[in-house]
Image (tube, rainbow, N blue to C red; front, side):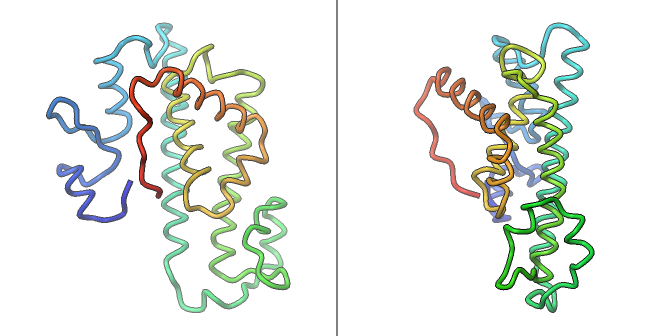
Length: 207
């Protein structure tokens, strides 16, 4: 992944959007379209269940995961854009009380005060924390979402969790690790990926 417009144009000339997949000379952008193509070319194992209702639920969770992550990712990038007075302490006496315990602490400055930029970031993390709690509650004690093996839903959720865990967003890793169900889920997905890999792991650039 890259924020360089030249990279995006080179990898995805039609739209400039990522992710993009080149398959036999055909360029496919959008994660949903990529998964559709992979499911068509490599139908075993299938990414969606044969039962129509389960397949709809899996596709719905995948879409929710993708759209939710994109929403908060874009908000995080927006709030980090410099604004006049960002370094000044924020008048956060009321808002901090609405943020979940531990989220704002990631950005605590000396004396416990948050700058205006830090407070905006904390608000974004608070939203992410709520979505992670939703996922954790929905997963419960199951190994994977909707099935005994990973499905399209799991690919999308795991991709989101991996990017949050290993990416540049301060505090996101801690939010995941504070939810044991999600940490264990990531470990199961990583074990499945390693077990089924047919090529050496790719060294991907950090975000």
